[in-house]
Every structure is written in C-alpha cells, then in structure tokens.
Image 1 (cartoon, rainbow, N blue to C red):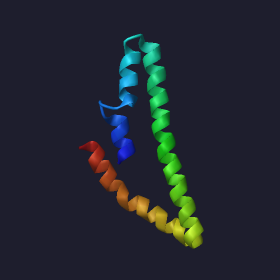
Image 2 (image 1 turned 135 degrees about the vertical axis):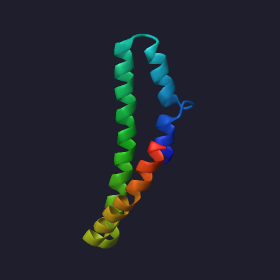
Image 3 (image 1 turned 180 degrees about the vertical axis):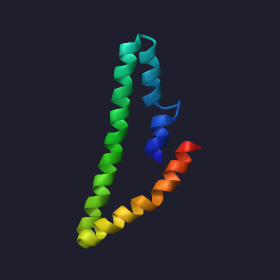
Image 4 (image 1 turned 60 degrees about the horizontal axis):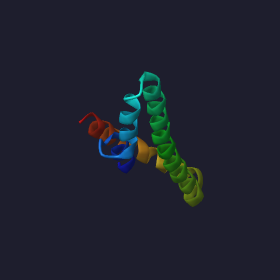
Length: 84
C-alpha cells in the first residue's frame, strides 16, 4: 500500500516531478509520466518476485501455489481500495 500511496499522493516527489515537467511542454510531460509509471511497476514487480522466491525456498512449488492464492485473495481488496 505504501508504493500505491507514494505514487498517487500529491505530496510526494513522483507527482511533483510530473507537475514540473508539465510546465515545460507536452513531450516532457509524457516522458516524465512514463518514467514515474515504469518506476512504480518496477518496485511492485520486485516485491512480487521476492515473495514468490521466498515461497519457493520455504515450501517449493506448494509455497508458490500458496503465494498465488494469497495474491488472488487480496486482489478484490486492492481493487476496491483503488476505486474508492
């Protein structure tokens, strides 16, 4: 949730950099938006990879299956909080 809050809050540097880029033109605004978006998905993917690897390390394929079920079970909560 911290990553989602950091990338969507108006007080953090991710959105402030997009605001400052939009004052200089549309092309800089697009490039800065892509940069912030790729950065947001990088950290989420890194956390996902660490969790899957630790599940495999602890319980092999059964651990990976449990991690997958955990992600599937939390998905409705994440979607509901993002739409709110």
